[in-house]
Amino acid sequence: MKRPQLKPSLGIAAALVMALFAVQGGEYSSLDLLRLRDQVRTQRDSILALRTEVDSLTRLRRALETDPATQERVAREVYGMIRPGERLYQVVPAEGAGR
Image (cartoon, rainbow, N blue to C red; front, top):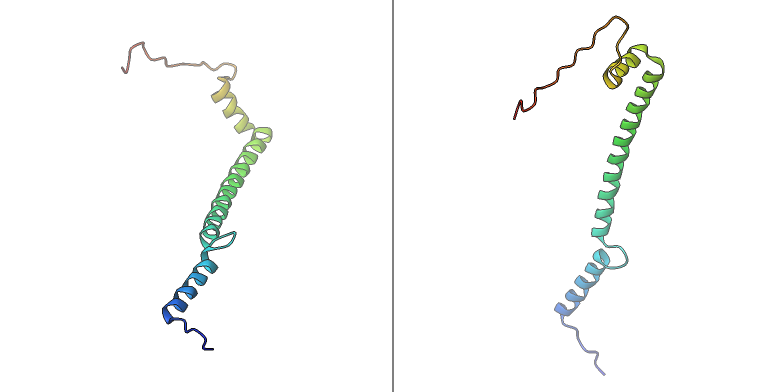
């Protein structure tokens, strides 16, 4: 009994299907891997930005607790405080001005 001959094109097609499955098939595809790498990169950038912000806020907190110049600046800007003997001038725009 003679064994049936497979056409070469059928073998090539089967090899291509197997190669495609190896790259894209299974639970995680190559595209999933690329998306996950992009997510990791984005998360690392986010962590770096947050660390920078935390460092900045830590320096500000420390300055507010210990630096008299910073304390005075905040008291003047945020709370409108003045030193004894100083006069506070406020510029109030006239109603309807700038419209």
